[in-house]
Amino acid sequence: MKLGIYGGTFNPPHLGHLAAAQFALDALNLDRLEFVPAAAPPHKTLPEGGPSAEQRLEMVELAADGLLLPKKVSVSGMELHRPGKSYTADTLEQLQAADPEAELWLLMGTDMFLTLQNWREPEVITRLAGICTFARTQSDSGELLETQARYLQETFGARTCVLQLPHIVDVSSTQLRELLAQGRGQEYLSPAVYGYIIRQGLYGVHYDLKQLPDRELRACSYSMIRAKRIAHVQGTEEEAVRLARRWGADEEKARRGAILHDCTKYLTMEEQLQLCRKYGIVLDDLEQQAVKLLHAKTGACVARDVYGVSDDVYEAIFWHTTGKADMTLLEKILYIADYMEPNRDFPGVERLRTLAYQDLDQAVLAGCEMSIQEMKDRGLPVHPNTVRARDWLRSKSSGKEP
Image (cartoon, rainbow, N blue to C red; front, side, top):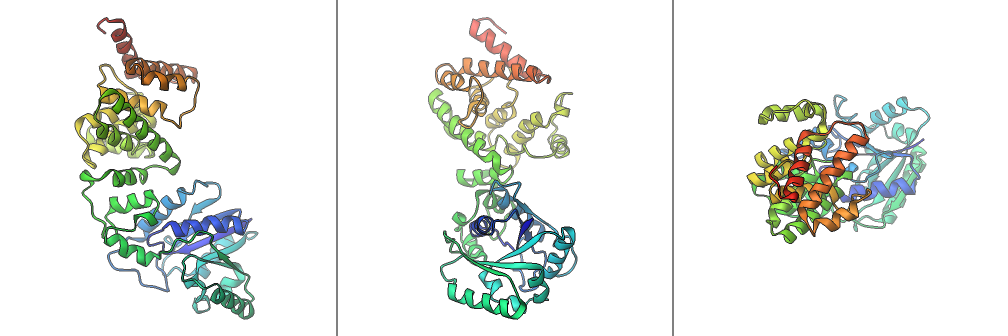
């Protein structure tokens, strides 16, 4: 197996790091690439008041997840779990011991590559791993890198590789920290990492979470879910706003409800239950067993308590999974937008999309009926609130009182 090791402080991890990792995967034909954030880098002193090692690890996990390559890209906290300075030689020895047959390649930026001979045990590093560097910025000199590569080859017998990235992200982490403190630089970060920075108040970025602009609210939402879910949240937002415009609902409330509707979806069952206890959410027997049902209620509470959404947006998020009898216009919009957003693909979804703009009640009724049938087909219990929503909509359609 050919394994790339990408170490660094990642303070913060930015798009340049991700571009380098993705390019190295292909250029070196790596089977896997592992980000290894340093806990206590020996070559530099981390700025005071910056993120903890654990926070940097969490940001790298969010950034790596955004590559959408879970089978090829991972993040290791091995240097956080090892006491003392984070020496690369120790990390490589630990990795080789874990997989003696692996061919290791150490990935690094130009500043690290040009000073490798000054690191602790460079002879061990070059014996255990090939050394790959990449020019990330306009100031990186190809000639200087080639000269250093020859020096490492002649002095240590190193295997080296110099990559010129096709798409330059001309910023360093130091420059980015300065930009963030000035309220700029967001374009150099993945939205999820930017959202994490906002939520944690890092690098001098300070927002009132209950008064966030839409862009920052999206970033916070994306930082709380898996990258593969972001397209669904985006699609739900687009659909909810279109439906609100069609049926005369408040577009901004529909937008913010959609942005936050899945914000707790990836919490564990225990984390969900902790939020239920915190917010006094009473669960029925079915909800105590199903995380999928809990995230609507816990997400609604977080949306109101942390991000300051209004009560009607809270209610729309609260009921977006099961529906209920006597749904408001906003509740119907979020329920059906979540069900039929553009990324959904199942039999009958196109009919549902057409119906939603012709007769919203009939579309929600069809969604409830399809959901009930799906649960029955899978041998799973149907939530009583979905049945009540269906029965209420049927009665409303027939002109009878439910």
